Length: 290
Image (cartoon, rainbow, N blue to C red):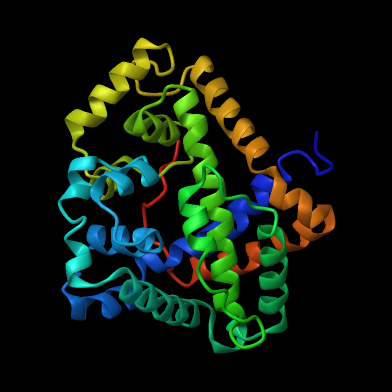
């Protein structure tokens, strides 16, 4: 049972989550990592997102990220830690986040009272997140929290990262329960009209068109996709069930924040995300449409 309006936590997640992801597409991240020889998108992404876990191997990263090809991950991990240690990457990540949010939102916005309010709300929600079974959340939860009074935009980014990885870790468990392998999960999400576009998925996750077609065939064999690669009614129902179950496993932080706090964080987060998108924070054609 929940005291929140239906899908309130999910709406809040969708409002704030893009603020976390802006750094992955930011020129600032490239500038920060280039001195260490990390100058391509995939190794930069893998290093920056995996750094809280420590100098782990490819198997751990593949397990934690789920939708990435193990072969693609193994091209860069663990060798990336020879170029820059996890602590070095984490410091570069924070500098890149600072520059990214300043570039997209402006210096006045990053230090504003509204930014600080959003940071406090998101941090309060994250107090109810739990570590067991959530490796990416747990690793980020062990990092220092930037002070709201000095750097509210960094505090907000940290809190949003906690909430994002908390939901993501839960979602992986749901996908496995539904017996969707990493690429089947990606293909069915894209077919729903909400996932990243197939071209982006192939370029960034390390798969090829044959892999994609094979996953479509497997999903069609389960009655989840039709001959045109569209979700069947059964497929749409499965995607609805996946999101509902993820909502259930991720409800604690939003219950803790309360309906009023969730509504306010959704409002503030939506405004900030809208400004980031309008400022060119994401590549054109990133999200697929149906």
